[in-house]
Image (cartoon, rainbow, N blue to C red):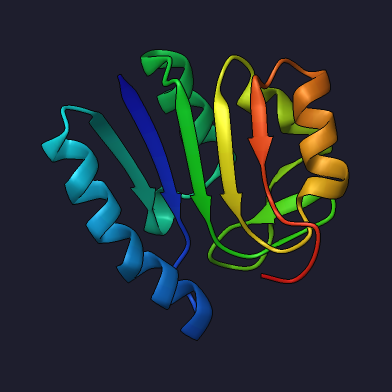
Length: 123
């Protein structure tokens, strides 16, 4: 029972979500989940892929900015997009980021994501 939490923290909105997510992490640990929290300079595609492939989490949780076709890192550059949506394969993903369900969510499901929970409009 493993969860990977990816948390951007580079402006007011992402900082709020970063801090709010701390309680979720604490509660999940208390319920017996193993948590891998990816943040700061580690919020990059290579590191995320490595952690996911080495640990096979069942749930991925992303907090940060996004668009219809991608999720962004701390430099507001694309972190995960439709081309790399296979990162969600065999997981349930919850992405708290604007508009990401439109293209990214659909592509993630095509590439094996069990369920992709996201937003249709600005969060």
